[in-house]
Image (cartoon, rainbow, N blue to C red; front, top):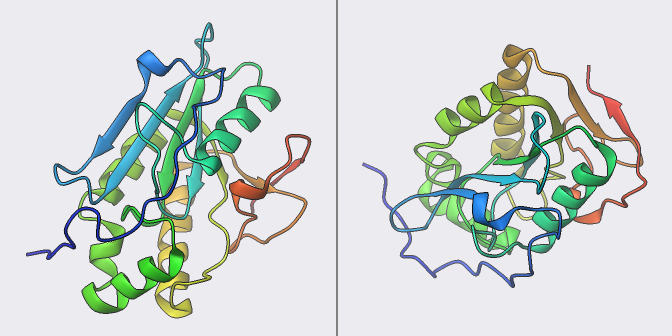
Amino acid sequence: MTKHISPGALRIGRTVQHAPAVDVAGIQADFSPCRTWRYGLSLPFRERSGPMIAVFLKNPSSASATAADKTVRTASEYVWRNFPESGGVHILNLFALRGTDSQEVGKALLEKGAAYVIGPENDAMIQKMLAMSAAVIIAWGGHAGVPASPYGQRVRSCLDMLANSRLPVWRNGRKGSENFPFHACYWAYQDALIAVS
């Protein structure tokens, strides 16, 4: 049985408006009933019906069906600008536990274990959303705040899922690496992507 921290125990940060290109009425947000975990967030674009692009991040914060956080807004705006045939964005996360402060997420991992921070339904949601995506941009950043060893294990597990999906996988070419791709919060809209081997 998975123990959980009561909702609100981790700070989930500020919200911002969703990017103007996002059709807010069509957003699908998949939370646990207690809202401790967010497993998926699908953001369709207005007046577009093309294939969705998945953006794979570290862990969710405040973004929901009604509001974004800075990272989600930047990622959705980037995809809208750079993939004119895309119909929207699926947001995935290494860890489904909601929290803005990565040190709090790391503390929860040490206290409750990796399975708690990953989230009991996260891998199933990742695989489901990959099956509905045309390509993936990995953008989870480094392990800052989260112990390096379990972070590295989770990254390898998720890279294996991506390899099994046979989808094209890209990362920001300006900074980062395959294991530690440049976090989407810091992207510039003109940044180029490179393929992940």
